[in-house]
Length: 451
Ligand code: PLP
Image (cartoon, rainbow, N blue to C red; front, side, top):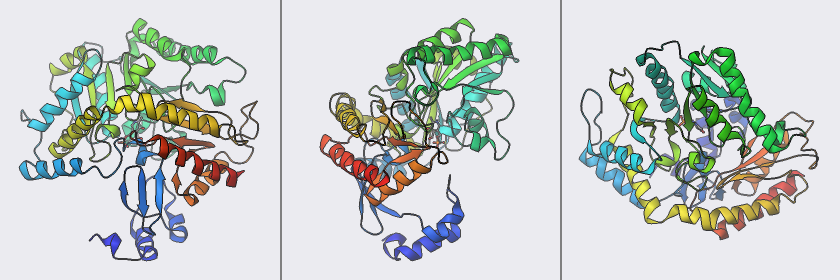
């Protein structure tokens, strides 16, 4: 009954190109090429307007952890829409789905991360975090402790605040980012930047760049460090084991808060509820979104430790979004977390899906184009290289070979994303070994076609 079922693909594509501005896209290219139109989805498969069944090895944008087409989610959304479609949580009001989700997240989150500030997305949540850490130190009588340190090539969102926290140069070149007071240090990307160092030595050196930056700015000026436990959009960069413990030590020594951006890593992606647990980080704030609702409804938030929540609680925090804790989104997120637990999805990831994915990736790493495997649980990248031993990059414009490979994936009914010349994999967590075998078959065919 939707419009997509009534118009032919070419007509829809023309309307799309004429009226629809797409994110992270050169929209003028769509006039000739036409965007691929996804009409429905079930499990790990998308269906496009031409009837192709496409294996989605990206879970949408790293978010559809439960897989597509879970009817329970739709039922809960409909029920909540009928009961209370909207009310806000401003000015001393609240509602049951918001309360229940905050309590559930406090139970799931490690340590004393017991308080939740809701947002509509990861970007919004990181804007919250930026204001929250600055307000925290101001409340403690240190308003000058306001600088935030992040990493080059980090991704924390697209709003001006979160995009400034991110370290994506092409984003910074547009529209006045980064805003003042945000600094970016080296990323722990041993694959591309480690040279002849061992991963351990390189990881330590990258972490110590944080201490250098803190000393340069003065510890009394630095509010927080923010990082993804495993960088996602930067290319699935799994840091060396030496990295996070040293970051933790440095932050503790200099009284710098840690914000772990769990937007991708959270909710099972790395095999634990949170990537911080996988990487041994003890954050003061965690950013969440995506897998919180498996992408079925837009919701994000910040899970905040006792100390920061208490200090913020002693002032009016003049911050919030119309959709903070939206009751329908909260109900959908709760249902997502309920299903994850009922189906023991973390056990499936640890014992079935992640080992099968690792095996498939190790097989693909034997391909002459593939330099190796970066993997943590159910997020992975395969760097493409002309020369395995040296981890060399292609001489062609960075990203060309990756782009070509992504197009061949499409032609083989597989969604893999490329970041430069890395192929990215982040499938729904429910994926089965049989589906992983189909993924590997299609990926190999795409690699062969690229080679
Ligand atoms: N943080 C991380 C680590 C992300 O990967 C993303 C999105 O990809 C965001 C924040 C931004 O989230 P959103 O797109 O929901 O604003």
